[in-house]
Length: 336
Image 1 (tube, one colour):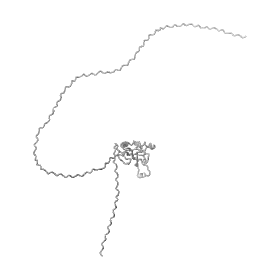
Image 2 (tube, helix red, strand yellow):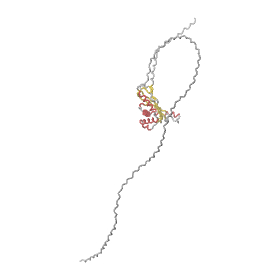
Image 3 (cartoon, helix red, strand yellow):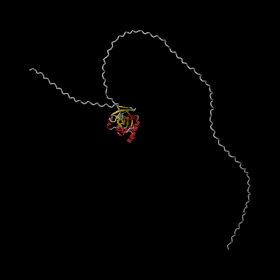
């Protein structure tokens, strides 16, 4: 049989009894009743005060002064100035002049009337006033000077340069290119250090310095007779007003269209440009100048050229016959 194990008996532990704590009584607090709230009163914002305007006090009025009306003036009475009356002088008594008794002169004999020669009336032809033909060519001439680099003759021989100059003239004058003609003349200029031997070598291809070229241009426009004065005056006014700078620009623009590579390096400079003061009117049929137009538009009609006088034909007169030579006279014979 197992040995019994003693079981420990629990000892009771005293439990502390809580002592009740008296609850504190709160001190009463007096709560005043709410005071009545005042009724809100709307206070309007102050109205803007008008800006005071200064009113000047009235200026004192001058006291009116009584002006009495002017008294009537007496009408002036014109008193004539007495003229000087000269004292009459008695005229002198004329001295009697002796007048001889006239002697009757014999009556003159009436001259015998001489019959006047009869006047034969002149019968001739009146020259009609010259007039322009129905169609004429208005012809204006001018010239220009250009300074070129390199050989002036080579510049003149280049057709692109001449065509660009013609197109520049046409663009400024407002006429077609085929109405403009131009002729280039070279003026070559040697350097100052050229010797006579070097001048002779020019013909062998020596390069010279830049020089000058002269360009003579002609503008010919075919118009009706009634338009000749207007077109001629317009051409003169336009071309005489052109400056070298304007001509340079027109030629470079034309060269740009023809040869752009040459226009990029311009080798010329327009120095002068001028035009004549009158234009010629040319008959399109005979190509003869028949009139002119000046810069104010006045037309002068030239008389027609005289008709050629036919040369006298050689006469067919008989040639003179040779005169017979005198026969030699026989010499007197000597006596036998």
